[in-house]
Image 1 (tube, rainbow, N blue to C red):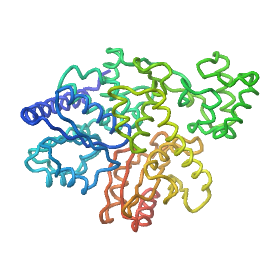
Image 2 (cartoon, helix red, strand yellow):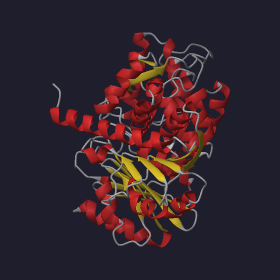
Image 3 (cartoon, rainbow, N blue to C red):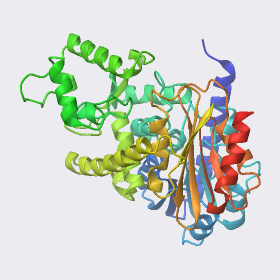
Length: 470
């Protein structure tokens, strides 16, 4: 049954996007240069790729800048560049006051899905945010989805980028037993244009390219006791199940029979413990039709991880080019290996510091203060991974902090499993940062981030714990 209220909001949003598209077309009529500024995660890079490709198809001269977060200093710096048209993606809604102030006489378009400021944009600032139309922007559409709708309104030829929008949605954890809301409409277009296929299977990352032993050894979700982190232990485990014979460890997940898969699932579940659900090992898998079989980014979650890797390792250009023009499997593997090593280091640090003052456990929260021990660009990734650990109770708030350049602290927060306590992380961060000078925060209900001065760390932690504990 169609929810009329949601349907009405969707069409209002679509009409607003088309209005903004008409203004954009007028703005570029005699100005052929456009600047795109976007976030460095999977959703931000997906959005940037869609916009860059759509603008290049209009024969525009496009430059882009990918940032870990948007500061007032960044806004001032970008505003001085020699462009008359600017497009912000996956951030900007929370900085309308600074954009209004610094972009006089220039056309600015903000494509976002996070809760914004209650500040009216100037006439030259055009905001496209589903949150403003009462659309669930934490589930139904991400920034890359908004970028897709904008590019589709610009030219129908851009419908061939529907799959890129879904990469961003997956990166923002908006695929939960399928796509919902506007994401579902975009998914149907991707299917209609034969851009991807879908099947349900074991969700292990890299299942199509890694040997089964390495697949289990690299598993972070779930963590398999005695196996995660050790390829030799994984090999012995598979031998004990009779899934591997001799020393031929080239077998992949796709080579298993149905009975072997069931045996593997039962054995993993037994190792993890009684509370573990076997169903959590399965997920929808989406494969890109044009990616070769040997590609490590053929499956949508793998592609999303690759984009996160490109942004967090300082190579967003590689991610954007992969979305638009593709990438050699060997080059993708090289970047993913480097990223995986940094994530493994972060997880080892987390496991080695359990029970220390660096990790604070409360009734509804876990606060992880990495200081300088984890690369600040990996903070959000570590937060997301810990939120999936079977040892973490559903509804728990995971907060990870790490030192950032210029005496700042980067903070990321996620909800583990279902948000059973109905905590809004955006509101939590808004209150926790309220009395901290120079604090900057953003996000939505189930994910949020902040930047605060290093001297305010304890104040933030204490305030947040106090709010959650009430």
